[in-house]
Length: 262
Length: 226
Image (cartoon, rainbow over all chains, first blue to last red; front, top):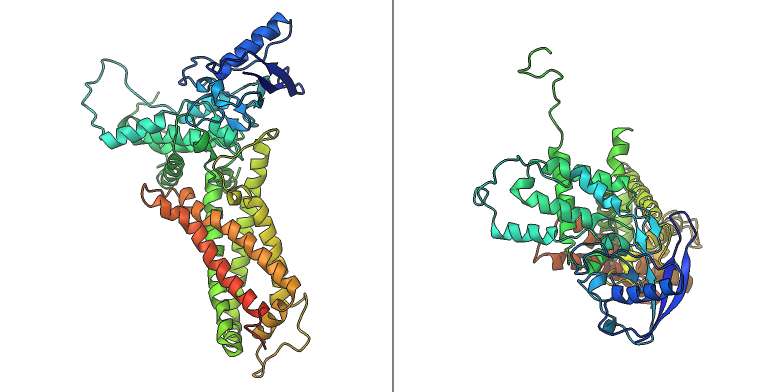
């Protein structure tokens, strides 16, 4: 197969970028999209040119490293797959394919197609954790979790944090990502201790990073490689309302009630 | 930062308040449409209805000021959100394909702005009578404001019919996404009822728009005349 590739090239974070057209020939229909780019890079290296920088790691759709907006759709034309799981047989021969990085103010470009997604990590640091005591492993049946809750929590937990939801959203909103993380932990008993403050902290962190707000367009769900449902966004909004009502704390005394004077 | 500023710095809070205000406005357009349908009962009914409203100046002005405040809150908050959303993506995609997002959902800021302009025009036209007032003194036989005459005068003119029909289409688009969205924004979702929530927007939009269009076309096609 033969393709014309329009690829976004940008030397560094503060440099001007632009599209460069490459010809990819001798492409096997069984190549994945990333293998097609690998082959292009080999050729570029052999010709003494700078290879196209793009992110990848596991190449089996679970790490969330690969990105790429392919012909205007994050992760390309197939639903429920990441870019590494996309095969060239999916494209018509001799087609022009436009490849762009995730575009969001919160995801600054590092180079070419590689963007800095640490904003999502900082949201996780703000509240995407649970407190557990270390020590011997707890017996499996100590905490009983209903099958339905476990399944729903797992649906939310299947988010791999790739950021396609942000890339697809007209407003570059990270609501689906935050919703998946908040819902996953809010539904399980292990997540209950921080439930009220977690949603506040994570939404606050999300706003700080400069993501947009949710426009209820559901474009995020349509591109999510893990089919994370927008119903979790409703759950996030519910958790947020709940937290707004319950979150007012009883003011802490300055001196510990049982403490001796230090 | 003040507490109010902290509260509205959260897009989720802003959206909840904006949607509450928006729902107030939706309530008004439904009430407005149903009230105006009395034009089909003849000039006496609609002029009487208008004079009842005007006979209660305190209630009328409270409602007017309240509506203005609610509209102000809605416009102010959504404008702020829209500006922040523009900033969230500074470089646009060269190729862009939407998979799911409806036209209505993608044009909320545009339809909202057009709607605001239409409402200002409508107030100047049929409420204040600054634009194109009827030739006569505008009073009916009983000395009441002749709302019926104003409506017939306005919609006999193809220019105003065009503007109002366009206004209704914009209103319909805006409402069809807005009303369905409210459920999601308030965190109301349900496996089975979600279909109804999705239909609520287009349903309300169709109800209001068809009601209003009925009045416009009844006059234009000569079913209602002085």
